[in-house]
Image (cartoon, rainbow, N blue to C red; front, top):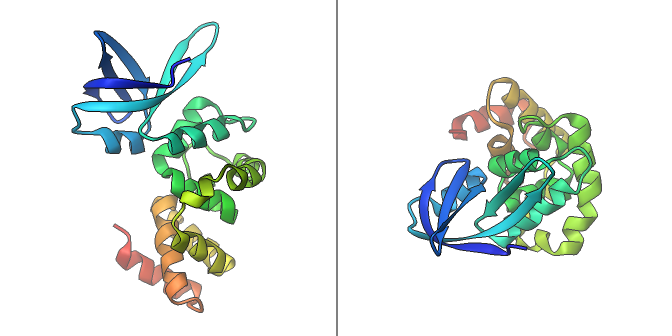
Length: 201
């Protein structure tokens, strides 16, 4: 079993990294978050998950243990494969994903490419207790957790839905909406949308 690969970062794209360790080049599938973390570095250490099947042997690399732990939890859910888990962890950081799961925000998960409502609900149901028990949720900034718990869920969901229909990505949109509602909890939906449009990049 390979725990991690440490060495020279020979090549990297948003989806794939090659790390030279002792003259052996390891090719690892990575998420966009890992790509952001290692881009521009000469030496890296990537934590590894080995996917071994009859027809393929694939390595997945992660910049931190937390991301790998979240990846392992995701692929434990029925219907979520390694590539789907990587896509989720490309759109959401580990901390953001914890927040989404703990707060039950299925709309954000459904906004990830390839994730339907049933899969989003299954991820939340299957992982809510596991995330809490694993201690991963402790790495979520307290302010983020408070925002998730305190905002008006109905207004939040309507605002995120409206902004998504306008073509904005659900994950960053949800963060902006939550921040607005945390600061002004009684803001009506239409006003939240107007304020969010000014902030979303």
